[in-house]
Length: 227
Image (cartoon, rainbow, N blue to C red; front, top):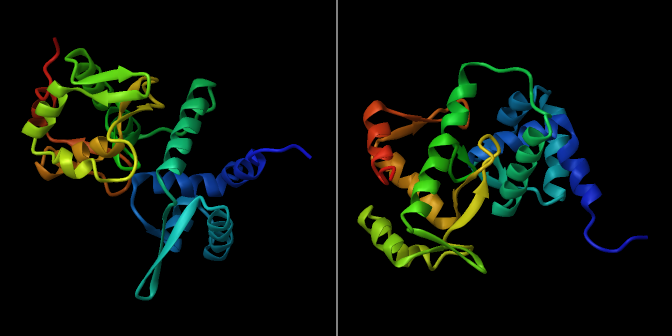
């Protein structure tokens, strides 16, 4: 028997189409009910319960009881990162869903990647942050520079509070549709929260898309003007 992590078990959990659809639905960062996840997967409620039990036993999702309802969410950021990496792998190897629609363009332009912004607008911003040296690259990975600290502080983001949170302040996340990096970590979460709080964009309740208003798009593009 081979030693080490059992990737086959995780692969079997993610590899089922119904469970894959459920996990993808949870990439919005929202907690959903079993009936909502059953609808996303196109299966019956009893079948959904069986799948959710397996995902919970495999520690890919967590369950929260609130009153009479049970809500399901991804277990943690590691699961979200792994799913995004699988999406990138699927897109890069030509394994994409053939069904497209009006939301397809919106998802590629701007979407939620678990708890931060992804898509074309996010990768453009990442490139500009790096070009202005607000973000730097060290042996340990992505880091916020002194200029970057001043920039995000001007946006009203409390960096001191973010530094007390678990996980990295900032890190690269490979964008599956753009094949380039966007900003993740607690700073990426705070940036998305700021965008929504300022009314620049709203979240599409039916998908992962983030929809910018014309004024919000202009404000976002001027955050870090292209050099």
